[in-house]
Image (cartoon, rainbow, N blue to C red; front, side, top):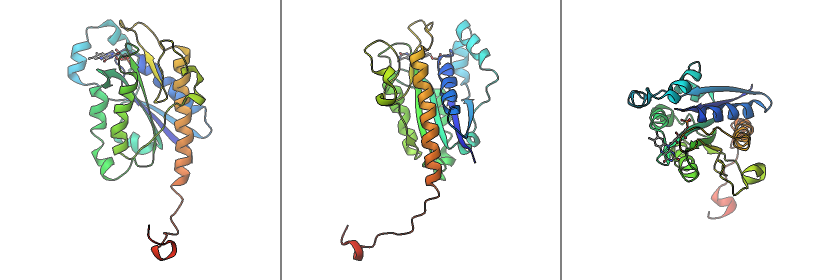
Length: 225
Ligand SMILES: Cc1cc2nc3c(=O)[nH]c(=O)nc-3n(C[C@H](O)[C@H](O)[C@H](O)COP(=O)(O)O)c2cc1C
């Protein structure tokens, strides 16, 4: 049975979409992995606010064939990579709204012990690269997911003092204050590495589900614990 990796994202202007494609590419590089890319539904108020912007129209057109994420996509996945641009240092309302539909999965523990990673896009270097990823991780911990980052050892490209995206918390890109900067090769490399790491960790965790607890230590054997 292959290990299933879902890349679920929101992207208004295409940067997070490009990062999602790189994350998916990284996941596919691991043996015996099935990958799905899904976008979360747009919110009508946000669509209305941005629908006159050429950059938004162009980016939405490029994503028109990406299916919308459902709770069954989350159930299908053994590992999930979540991507959202920043909104004031936090995830978008589109992504949060989708996460807020996962009550039935939370209730049944259906996402517990699945691997998860987070990636983002910000306009500026100090605009929320790290806070967006970390705040996104909080609901994932409530859902019981096991978090995967992009550590320095496997990602020497982030060991820099230049203005590029990416940190041990996860991949990131910089869109620039006017949104014209595109994901750079080191940023896409970090994105690929998150995909392959989530795929590998998800494969191991999937195997772990078959480990049964045969022996529960008793106080009389080991003394008071
Ligand atoms: C309402 C709003 C709030 C934003 N807040 C921030 C912010 O706090 N810091 C920042 O760097 N960029 C901020 N941005 C810029 C977005 O993060 C940027 O457009 C995004 O990273 C581009 O990714 P996308 O092409 O995938 O949509 C904001 C944009 C909007 C529309």
